[in-house]
Image: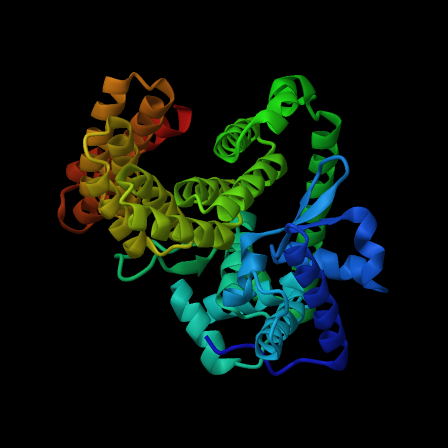
Length: 452
């Protein structure tokens, strides 16, 4: 993809400079900036903080007092100068360029990009994600906001809103998209009407998100008692004990759905691990950060965390950790529609799982999802059946129910397609009796499916 670097403005340059100062300050202050320090960065600092947070260079941690944490993505902007006292001019210029591109992309209104995607899909359907990106690159290279992650994000929005859907077609490289009935309606509108409709939906999503945030805040549980003992003994623990205390707390917060708090614990853990050069602890912290990002649907950030964890696990030859992180990394690729790559990664994860039944079961299940996406249902059923047997050995009720549901859905889909194809065939070659029989079998099945 061509780099989006041709639309910088003096305003962008000034804001990028302010964003650099914020990130550099956090880098030198234990990767933290407290809310009451915002004013030190001058006019417009709040806007810069919001943009850095939106692009996951900073993460707001709701503690007392609240603060912004520099994420691994933000730290990686500094490359090999992450721990340098003074950043070189060359490195600073590279960072400023990236920040200017970030500002430009954030200025793109999502409903406008979604409209362009609908036009591309409508004109070329069915069309894969890679073909959509290539089309933008070749036909509209000056369009703002067409970086690969941004296109992925907006494709996902359109799928969630029901404007696009997967085309039923023999699998080639990726699952292709086509317009749904809702998408066709937007495709037929003028650009002004279409973007107005998409914008309304986007603003409704934002309003709904704020409502959920408010409800979550009102229902916030008091975690003081849960961690009181840990907090009271922290000063008496050495670094190695602290590392795993933070990991335990991160796990608990993650299970409770308190992802901001979980991320804060994993960031603390990673920071200590870097100071004491504990590679294994850092790998687990990165895995935890990846899990949090994945559950928050920040798939690009999750992929970066998992890849860092993967490199450390390979260096340490920690095969079970490597199996886990490959399984998680494969899920990122699957979510972003790169099914073949996901399948390759899941196969590697299975090899590394060894005799661990739980890891084998989850990886086989994930491989089955890939084959189902490719509409190779016989292979998907084979893998899910193996997964089911292992989950039954583990007596994992939730996972057993999930796999059994998938197997039933595949059976129904295959039977429905068989009956439909049979009815179409006998209409062409069969007798009146054959046609009537095939029709009744199809209708009976569809009625049973409808009332199930």
